[in-house]
Amino acid sequence: MACYISRTLKLPSNKSFFLFGPRQVGKTTLIKKTFSAKTSIFIDLLLSDDYQRYLKKPILLKDEVLAREKKITHIIIDEIQRVPELLNIVHYLIENDSSKPKFVLSGSSARKLKRGQANLLAGRALSYSLYPLNHLELGESFDLEKVFDRGTLPSVYFEEEEDIARQRLQAYCRTYLQEEIRAEALVRNLASFMSFIDFAAEENGNEINYSNIAGDIGVSSNTVKEYFQILEDTLLGFFLLPYAKSKRKRLSKRPKFYWFDTGVQKALANKLTLASVEGQVSYGKSFEHFIIKEVIALADNLCSDFSFSYYRTSSGQEVDLIAKSPAKGVFAIAIKSKDANLKNKDFSGLRSFAEENPKAKLLCCSLAPRRRFEGEILVLPWRELFEELGLFRIIS
Image (tube, rainbow, N blue to C red; front, side, top):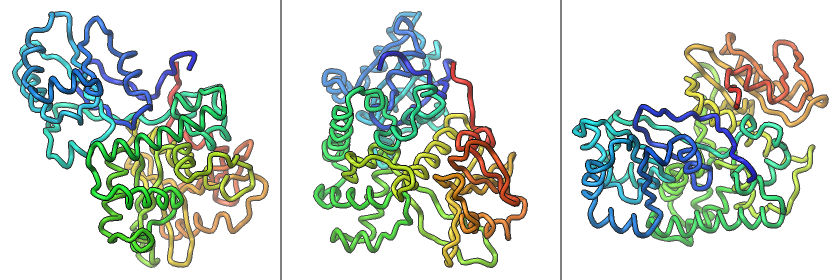
C-alpha cells in the first residue's frame, strides 16, 4: 500500500482501552500512527522474545513500567490474549501508579480472555473494534466489484496483481483457520472443524440450521454452536439475530451468520476465480453481505446506539436488516442489487414489517443512481443509506 489510509475509528489519547480486530485489518498501523514512539513503550507478544519473557514472569511488566522514563505516557501491548496474566499487572498499575500511564491493549481474539476469565479491567479500560477498510476510508480507491472479489483487508485490496491477491487470501485463511486455531487449542478435532468451515462459508448470510450442519459433518448440534461461537470470539464473523417483536406473525428464531470480510468468505467457499457479475444470484448475496457488514462496522466505529436484527416470517416475508435506535427510531432496510427492475414483490417484506411497525422508516438500499419513492418506501443509492442512518464521517 502506497500511503497510510485514515480510519473512521478514532482512538482516545487520554484513556486506557482494548482494541480488538482480526489479524491484518490494520490495528498495529493505526496504533503506531496515533501514538508517538517517543512517548510509548511497544510490546509485541507475537515476537518470541517478548512472549517468552512475559509468559515466564508477568511481573516484569510492573517493574518496567514503574522504571520507565517520565516522558513515556502510553504502554502498548499487542496481542494481549497471548499472555492474559498481564492484565492483572495492568489493573494494578492503573490503580497504583501515581503517574497514571495509559494502556493500549490490542488483540486478534477475545476468546482466551473471555473463556479464561481474564481480568478485563472492569470499566477501567474502554473497548473498540477495528474492521477491514470501509468505503469511506477507501474514498476514490473504492471499487464495489473489487470488494466483492477481494474483500478489504488492506494488504489484499491494494495488491496490484490479481493472482497474488488470491494467494494472500488463501494464505490468510489457511494460517488463521488452521495454525491459529490449532495453536490456541480451541478445538479438539481440527478435521471436523475444517469441514464445518466449508459449510459456514457456503451458508454465509443464511439462517443457521445447527442440526443440518451437524448431520453433514458428523458432530452434535452443540458442537456446531460451539464452532460458530469460536468464529465470533476470534472475530472472524458475527451473528445477526432475528427480529422478535411481533404480536400476530410467526417469526424466524434462527440467527444468521456473516463473515467479517467478503474476500475471506469467498476464499473459504473456494470461489476466488469466479468474478462477480451483476444480475447473478451470487452478486446479490455479495451486495447484501457488504452492506450489512459495512453498516454494523460503521455503527460500531462511530459509537452509534443502533442495534441490528433481520425480519423473516413463516410465510417467507423478509427484511434484510432492521436498525433500531432509541434516538432515531426504527429503520427497515431491504437490500437489492438492482435498480430499474425492482418489482412490487421486492418490497413485500418491508410492507409486512410496516403492518405492525407503522412508525418504521422503510428503505430500499439499491444500485439506483438517485433516490426515489415507491409508495411509502424510499429507494436509495447504497451510499446514501449511510447518510440516512447518520453513519458518516469525513475522512481527512
